Length: 331
Image (cartoon, rainbow, N blue to C red; front, side):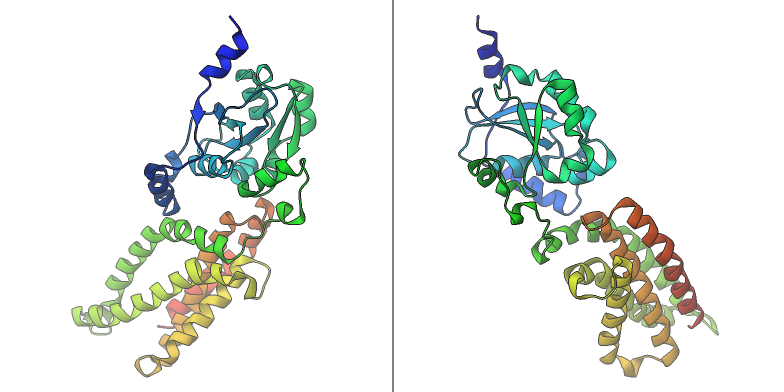
């Protein structure tokens, strides 16, 4: 029996066409529903009818990434080598070390990849490069690495061009569409904290100089939580969308400016119902809340490094706390 043919026949077959289940799953994880468990089994897969001359595309086992890669490869025959990244996308997993040299070596060896290919090379996504040492992989397995384009949809053109990348293929754009796609996850992840804050603000709003008042709780609580929700949307949704047009390098600084501006714009239409001290208090608190939430958006961006995030937190977390405390004392 030809062992090679038997092995190829038994490799899992995948399709480039998404099912309704795939679309529904993608929608759910965009809103952070069961995101941590959305994964596929690591190993070697065949797309189409790959032979020994077919290319090998390396990706993570986060199912949304895996699905995006296979959909982008419609019409070609390739091998897809999936690394165990515990349901984390390529870029984040490369930073955490799971999309890395050791795991790539392990999957090449365990899948017996070299029995299926004659060219001895794999294509690793460019965003996975921080975690992968091409030299170590080549030394351990004999398989060389080519770092492909940033985006999965460019892989076919990259292959057709003989492994040559254009400037666009090398560039992380992070444009308004990219940011809009990511905002639901960041918004939903912090939603439960907003609900806790809304409840706390309602309860605190009932406190007055005459004791605890249910009428004060209702009247002041509605206004206070309106400002709180505006600050939340400013930091979690509006600031990420207008990120390039906001001043400051740090995301927290951009969020601070967005929070202050959005509050001022909203308060223009509500100035008759607010005292000066209340307006100042909510201006400061809005800036702090918006700054904190936009700072969290660094995890969705390729613009920041772990050391950069730590530096940003050292600078802005004390500012956020300070603005909140000053705002609370102004009521």
